[in-house]
Amino acid sequence: MRKLIAFFLVSVCLVGCEQAEDPMVAEAFHQKLYLSELKAQLPYFSSKEDSLLFTEQYVDKWILHQTMLAQAKRNLTQKEQNFSAQIMQYKEQLLINAYLQKLSNKSAQLTVSQSELADFLNETKPEQVPEYRNMVKLNYIKLSERSKLYKQIRDLFFDEKDRVKALNKLELLCADTIEYYLDGEHWFFADYIEKDLPLVFSTENIKDKHDIVHDGYRYLIMILDQKQQLQPRNAQEDRKMAHALLLQEKKVAFVSNYQDSIVQKAKSEKRAVRYPIGF
Image (cartoon, rainbow, N blue to C red; front, side, top):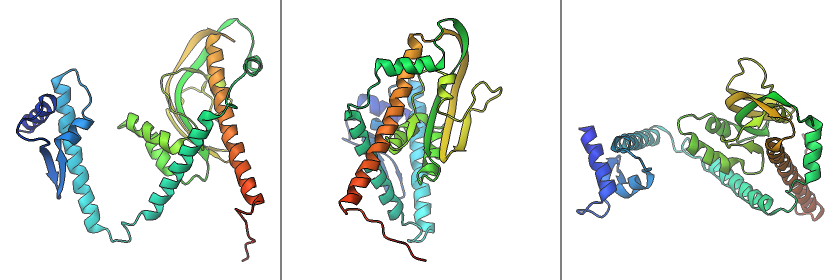
């Protein structure tokens, strides 16, 4: 029966519905799910079976969500349901992050010169002789040890159920206030990454997930893949990776310096004042 319902829903999504402009496909606790909402979430699938499976799972999740929401509202007091302070804090953080994102994207300071690139490469090992080098694909986030967003970021970062959606949310949370790398398509030389992360990738049986506190920062690291590859030092691939790392360093330094400067300016203009604290 459920497969027949799912088939009907997908068929309506694909060919349209002549009898109703936007028919309802599910209802739970006075909440309604309409065809237009389902169509907006339906990805392109090459097979009818995948479309059927997605539709069935989506409707089941929607009904579960509405059922749990109704139970929570029924069993929590008004005080327990009040998240206005957390919501306001979250909105304020998103606003700051969006501004820093816009600011750093426009900054002419965020360029890496050829001389800086050459210095970085020469610091590592300038020889052109090929050698087997450890390579790694990873995502990482570096944030303050006392970050109020830590738990929310950690739960999203290590979420394996819907990685794409989790990474999109992390992009909004992270912005430029902390250092992060969330692209899983590129390989990096492990010795480059070890310059910035408190982790040695040559260790045997290294774990996939790491939550490390080091020097006042917290590092969330997810290792996606590792390999050894015969590579010459200071080759074109080295230059691309070095450029990405130097650019990230400049971005973090730019944001940090900018924040310090505007705070000092605000204090000098008496727009921000610290008063003595007495106990």
